[in-house]
Amino acid sequence: MAVLDGQTLAKKIRANIKDEIKKFVDMGKRPPGLAVVLVGEDPASQLYVSMKEKACKQVGMYSKKVLLPQDISESELLDNIHDLNEDPNIDGILVQLPLPRGLNEHVINENIKTDKDVDGFSPVNFGKLHLGISGFEPCTPKGIIRLLKEYGIKIEGKNAVVVGRSNIVGKPIAALLLRENATVTICHSKTENLKDYTLRADILVSAVGKAHIIKSDMIKEGAVVVDAGTTKVEGKLYGDCDYENMLAKASWITPVPGGVGPMTIAMLLENTMEAYKKHVFENINSK
Ligand SMILES: Nc1nc(=O)c2c([nH]1)NC[C@@H]1CN(c3ccc(C(=O)N[C@@H](CCC(=O)O)C(=O)O)cc3)C=[N+]21
Image (tube, rainbow, N blue to C red; front, side):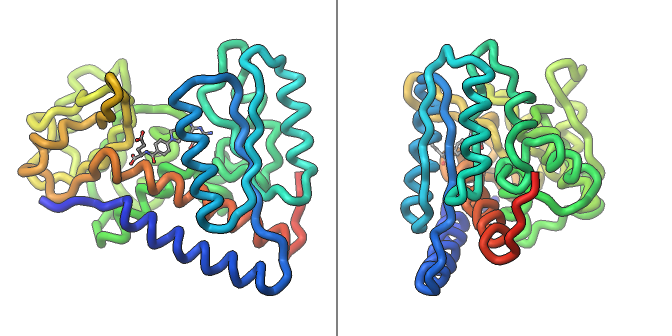
């Protein structure tokens, strides 16, 4: 058993980004800018948004927090997005999900300019991901692949089982694993006999968001376990996987906290850097 230490890798990535930004700023360029839009006052979302803001500050990025009321109309929210689309100091726009009831996230994501869509959730980037064309890749899936590669874990030819089919993790990680030539199975809430599938996984990615739904008797000896689900119960953070009881059985496993979460934020910074370089050096500002 060994731990896939996302915290340490994320720190290394952030340090590289910080150096890179310093070079650009020393050259007289503006710093990269990320806008994080939070609608409403969900405490979990507030925490994530403040973590993202802190990460930006730490590497020398400009971060703009846009806090909007719970009862904002779709058209008012879109006005804010359009302003950010046109803001020359903003390279990346992230609208924190989930949105309050009544706001359609697809409509919002559709209106984020493709070259500022650092979450990779707009239809163009999501489509590119599935077509194998380069574009912004969603941060959590991108971070998972980076972490597996960092530890030299072979993906090609392996049975990869993804539990969860969300647009933010399940679907895009399945696409990325497929691109890496894994044999990919996606399980979800209607899957019958989940354990039959998880037991076959060489690489198991869980993205459900239910504490300890994956037990140690559901994984194969020597499996690589990636836990992308986090749930807070009475102030304590749990992953989807029963980590303690899996440690002896898995060959590699991501902890919660300190696994996939920090990688998500590191990839957000990396995507923002990518957007920044396009804006500053290639002057690309397409719809
Ligand atoms: N548009 C959008 N983009 C997102 O990327 C997005 C989102 N909406 N909505 C919610 C999810 C969740 N998410 C996390 C990011 C970092 C940690 C993270 O770093 N967690 C720490 C622990 C933090 C704690 O103590 O709670 C860790 O795992 O070590 C967790 C969760 C991004 N999300």
